Length: 205
Image (cartoon, rainbow, N blue to C red; front, side):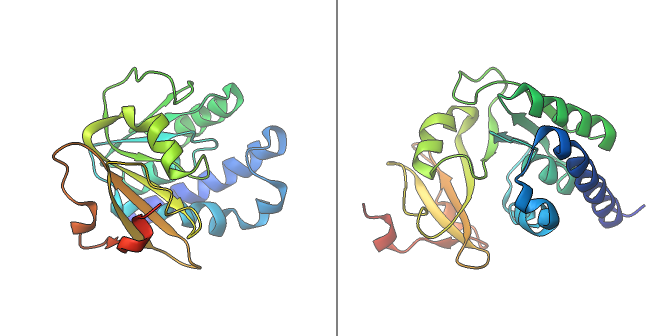
């Protein structure tokens, strides 16, 4: 089986599993049930080419969005999924088992707690908190020059934490991915060929 076929097959299995468990655990909103692929899975896949490995952490992963989707798409990386809800962690562990994702670990903790695992190279979070808040509360899960990728809209992309480099990767409908990188000797995130720099006016408070 080719890699592309494997990825698409696992994504379909994940969607089916998500909808089945959602009937009991309310993993996603009722209004999103008929648009899981477009609103959740495809949106999560925008992050895949921007990841830096070998370790990725998804904070406040919920139903594994985007972490499980990315673990399917980027099987060469290790993924750590952080979620404080025991019910959602039960779903995540079942999904990992049924999808046979050997590159995923689930940790049932609040991501604001001290890190108990090896630091990661990339941090991702989707619809959890504004970028500056997320960086303040979760960047301790990163290596000193790791990057954070936060999907967001134009109204929140300028909420930048102090002392970090920032880049903007546009996707669609005015939305995009805010790319942050910290550390005293961190290279510019926007030096990556696939990430456009945020204009100076957007960096101002």
